[in-house]
Image (cartoon, rainbow, N blue to C red):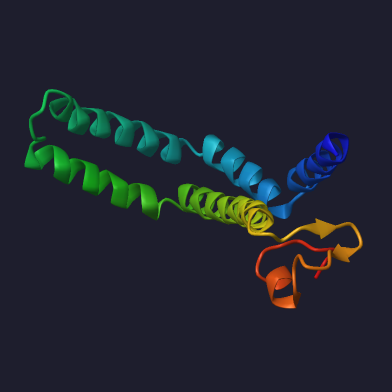
Length: 141
């Protein structure tokens, strides 16, 4: 069984590597890396965030000016087209991975609830039609 799982995990990894979500993420990342204004904004945001976090590490509150500066730079970052495209692509990729994880978690949770699935569909006494559609991957049901 372990070989089958490893083999199917390899197929899944290949499918993810070929996904449009990953291609868009990589493309938008390259575009953002080549955009000097985007890189400058990211560097400014990192510096402002460091100034904002430093007082918190010493158990004190950051200044209002530091808070305001971070907010202003975050607004500029979100308005940058290259950064916005990257963030959108990152969200789509994360959603795809979350969906995959949810399917895996659902199948694992269902199998511990008595839902056992074979290669040829749901085992008798395991999943019923509603069980299969609710997360148990029973032969495509």
